[in-house]
Image (tube, rainbow, N blue to C red):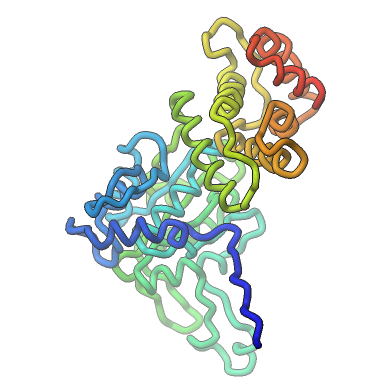
Length: 365
């Protein structure tokens, strides 16, 4: 008897796979006007991002916790001929929002170009199948479409991550593409014209300013939406708690769900160190060089859950938290270690309910 093949478990499904049921529910009940080649209306895209209920009662989870107006501006931009630039410091959900926008609008978030210092124009435009090129010469068959070119041909959303990491000459290869909505292929004396529905979502880390700033010509082709850090402690706690739960399920961690109080005090530490003062404003603090964003808080909690799962009691405690917390804060030992030690002695030690965390953090140093 033939053995049954084991189903392959995907570590990190794409948004359109992970939230397939929500997308189907929104699409099936969507009667609002939608731009050509969009899977759903702009109103439904915003509902998908912000959370709520579909018309058939399906619960829609929030993908973005923050100002709804920012998401409305982002979605409205993509319905015009201007591209969208999501900017902000690390950890403000730029990539997360970009992926979900593409999934909701095009049903496909995989048309992605990852910006790096060594990227070439081919990644944004097109390349060649050199074996076929040598045997048959230049032809459309030997052309290798980039994700951006495919998005143009199919009328979909292309994503370009970390624009400021790309060299300026590579960035500027987007100018004609975004302004004229065509991609010239001079080797074949033809051009690829974009179908309706095509647009580009780019992301830029504002802390990378000065690495490769966008030219004014390119910046004019984008409508920029700056994603801020979470406005309140509770808002940030909600973001971290939600993502930690999703990651724990994806990784099949046997630990219990992270206690809300552990998440809250971690987020409180990050917010105080980021702002340079305690929550009540009574103690001024020095800020470390690390970002201390919600993304890093998620990583710290998830690492703590892994420790609790395999080497602890099955539920994250102060000792599990301290192990990853120390590494997240101390990126530069010479600069960050004294700042963290001072925070422990002037803030953490004086909070009676944090005695366990103070002891665990001192042991971790």
